[in-house]
Length: 64
Image (cartoon, rainbow, N blue to C red; front, side, top):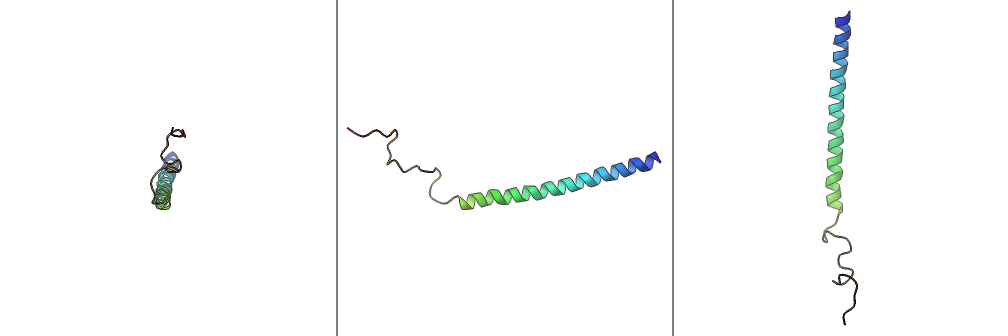
């Protein structure tokens, strides 16, 4: 009887591990798609936001 219970527990553990690994593969695939979509939606005009707004002046001081 104890052997059957241990066998049942082993089957449940293996089934749970297999289900968890399958679910983690799906989560990883979704995150990869989101990551690639983020690169596609970023835009093509340079990397930093607002880099050219100040006209090249570093600290906002006027000349002269």
